[in-house]
Length: 326
Image (cartoon, rainbow, N blue to C red; front, side, top):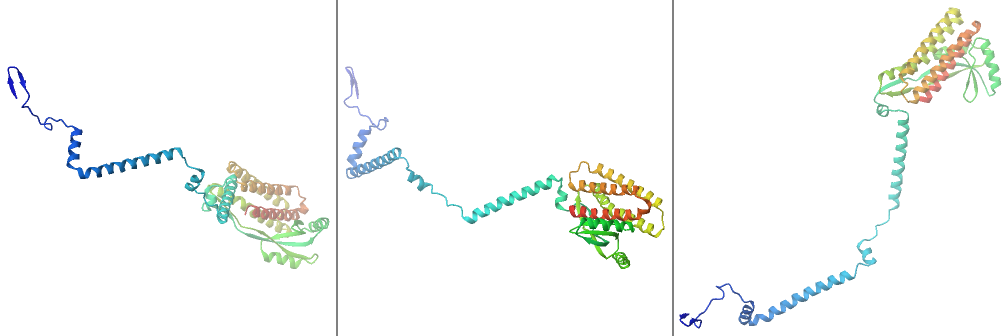
């Protein structure tokens, strides 16, 4: 390049395109095509194949977009589940019924105020053991009128004459704490046909979380046996002439008052308790209290007979109570 007076002469000027950063894509393609004449056709084929592949994918997408799944396609994708087997249905029903029964049982227990200790059976246990009392039976009747007539006759002779109804009308002359005592009376009774009748009081066992309530229940259940034995002793002494009616009635008054005090204490202790056993025990003691009170109006010449009638009634009610709550 020369700088003359007349201007710049570019005839000899040259430049390096790469060094200047200038790159002509068309020029390069031409160079590549010239250098690779044999491979150019192959590149063209590859490009055509790639283009065809893209078109196929586009077509598949279009087909999918405009052809949604049919109901058959849905069934194929989500097949129906198999029906429950008969055994599975029976098992399900059994489980449902079992659950219902358990619910009913727990509800019934809770309705009676039973606590966890009662359900487990490992808390404070109030218990009275099985007891047998041996009665002398004078006759057994089908007719109530015949039984009443026989009862009056026995009472006139000094026996209890209490009527036990358990399929027939049994007349009880007296009740003895020991088997041998009853047999001796039966052997010495010649005026009437007599036999033995056993009054069996079953074992009663109940659980409580409160020790004071447990003791009160045990004391309550013991009242029937204790009062029977006291009345029995009085009747024996009266028959032997070893005591007086006045002394016996005074002691019966003391027994009556002591029982009343216990009933009041028991009622106060269990007033917030909803267990049915408490109500039944209290009701039984009130009946026994009424029986004792009736002895105060008994005629002195018939006091021994009235006592035998009273303690037989007490024992029969005791048996029925124990059976109910056992």
